[in-house]
Length: 250
Ligand SMILES: C[S@@+](CC[C@H](N)C(=O)[O-])C[C@H]1O[C@@H](n2cnc3c(N)ncnc32)[C@H](O)[C@@H]1O
Image (cartoon, rainbow, N blue to C red; front, side, top):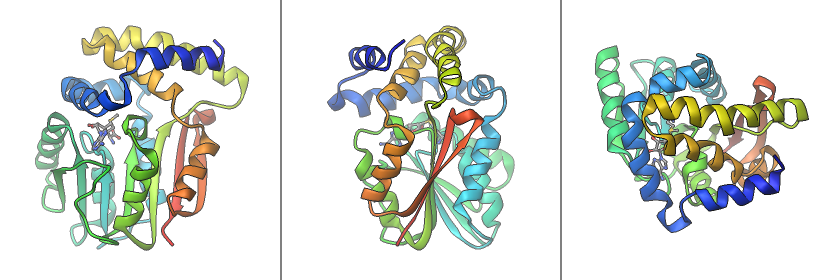
């Protein structure tokens, strides 16, 4: 399908900007119990490795303090916690209570609840001071926010100079063959299979359509640079279907 057709269709399906935050919150609270299982299934188990790569790009060290924005069920926060160790601290924030409560339960089960904590916060209005963290990460959430420039400026604001802001997200591959396969998978298979398993076809129709309206890889580099980040680079994974963007706080 052509890009402009996809964009027109997505604009009809997706919630209006003023309704988006409430829609996204309710949707993630609804799918929270099946979220991890479906992530593994949809990515054929590769999602854990992608999150670990994002954390490698954050370059945190033992003793550091790191923030994971829109943490969901906390998998990136846990990967960060393993790197900063017991002398460091990781804070995971999200605005879905359902996702946060699962993240908290997973932290207690894994025995690292003492150096990772989860709290409610809106990514567009982070309740932290300037430069409080050594790095900030975000995975698979940029598509859900209503104001991307503010989203990145908030992460830049709370990270110290020299620290990194890392963004991990699904992306549209540039090569036509991968683009076609990607469209088949996300626009047809995902809503069908996941809709049945998660019991929410809506949520997995939202997923591909939110991606249609999300900026491309190069555009995102520019948005991060405009938010005040320097040396912004994009690292494609899996033929460009996943991209890690990294920026340094000046
Ligand atoms: C697809 S999940 C990603 C979760 C996690 N980062 C991961 O890697 O699996 C998107 C998450 O973003 C959260 N989210 C979306 N917009 C947000 C906002 N404005 N503030 C805080 N959390 C937000 C949702 O509640 C949801 O938990």
